[in-house]
Each structure stands twice: as structure tokens, then as C-alpha cells.
Image 1 (cartoon, rainbow, N blue to C red):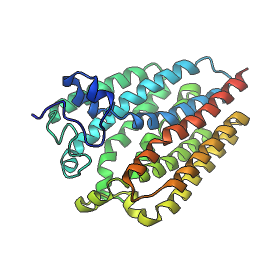
Image 2 (cartoon, helix red, strand yellow):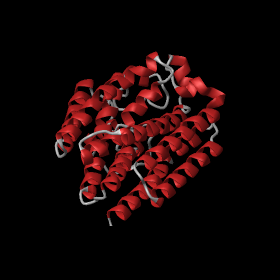
Image 3 (tube, rainbow, N blue to C red):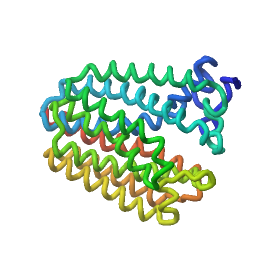
Image 4 (cartoon, rainbow, N blue to C red):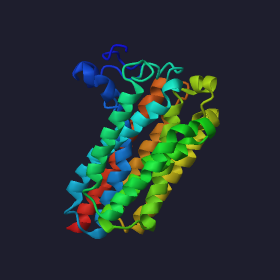
Length: 310
């Protein structure tokens, strides 16, 4: 087995490389704690829906606990999902320059060890889920099917980002399931808006690997759109803003939420203007900046919920 202290090529200079015990580093890398941006992006729709639903209910008393539980759940379940993704992609990852140093293809952990670790993370996620009502528990469990099939989609469709969007936007439904014990039209429109956002930002992310992906036959919207990526982002980011706006109107949101949406939209416009698909480092920075875009919208929704509950 290779050295467990060996660093992952696309994630260096982080706390896992410098502070974590050597034995724990491969597992922390499997769950992407060395680069938590994906956990933040999974969390954003959860927080959006929790805040919007609390505003609609005119009651924020349970919101702080929901925010904390969603935070824990997003980080552990994203970790479990990434571990599953690395298990299914271990042979492909060994053929891509950016991913060949990940724990499985580099031999830092065995497939069996990764499976045990994935189950352990999923059990923590289940413990979080059990704090909610039965409908929310069932809704959360239903997402696992999408998570399970996602890693295989890039082998069979040019649109794996849609499936990723279905998985990463699931939290847009969870806030309503937790608050109201149901999923209504407002939740579904918010979910659709979040899916459009995910398709946009993951297309930017996928442009880091287009050359390697072409060599090994991996499909993505980045390869599909190619030089027309900017126009595609105008479409998908535009849809995201429009659909989220419809959700806010349906939920009778007040001015702080609309201000948050305006800031969110401005950030997406900035990404489109800055984009250069030939610059992998820039694509990664723009992708990561979506956490800030999501937080801007969440801040507006949170302020709206507090205002409506006063």
C-alpha cells in the first residue's frame, strides 16, 4: 500500500495534509474534507428551503436546530457520496492526471476499507435524519437512489450534470419536508431552480478535465457545450434565477429574500463574464465561488424568515 501521507494532486496545502493524523488522511480525502466546497454546495439548497419554509410558516423557533442538523448531514452524506463515487471510478481515476493520486487509485486504502468507511458515514447521516419527522426521513432516504446511480451516468449520457443536479438539489425539498411534513409546488420550483444552478456550476468544474475525459470516453456538459459554454451558462443560470424567483413569489417572500436573489444573480453574471474555459485554475475558482453565491441568497432568505416571524 502506498504512503498514506501522499497528497492528492488537485488538493494541496490544506489542513488534512498538514494537521490530520497520517492514518486518517486517506479517509478524510475520500470524504473530501480536504476540499469541502462540495459539501457547502450540497448544503445551500437545504438552507434555502429551511429558511423559505420557516418564513412561510412565520415561525423560526426550530430553524437554528434545522440549520445545524442540515450542516452535519450535508457534510457526512457528501462524504459518503464521494466515497461511493471513488469506489465506482477507481479505475477511471487512475487514468486522469488530476485524480490518479486519490486514495483508491493510488493504493492508500483498499476498496473494502472504503466501503466500510462509506457505511459508517451513511450511518451518521441516518442518525441526523432520524431527528426529523417520518415524511422527512422518507424523503431523505429516497435521495439515495439518485446518489447511487450518479457515478455511472458520465459513461452513458452527455448530461450527467442533470443527475448530479437531482442529487445535490435534494435539500430544496428537505426544508419543506421538515417544516410542513409535505412537498408543495413552491418546494418543487425551488428544486428545479437549484438543479439549473448545479448544471451551470458543474459544467464550469468539468472543464478542468475535458482533455482527459475525451481520451477515456467520459461524457459531460463541458464537452457537449464546448466553446458555447458561456451561452449555456446564460441559459441555465438564467433559469435558476427565474425559477428561484417564482418560488419566492409563491412563498410570498418579502424584500430581504429578493435582495438576496439579486445578489445571487449578480454573482452568477460575474462568473459568466469571467469565464475562460481554457484556464483550468480559473474554472476551479469560479466553481468554488458558488458557495458565496449560495450564501448570499441564504442570507436574504434568513433575514426574510426572521422578519416574517417577528
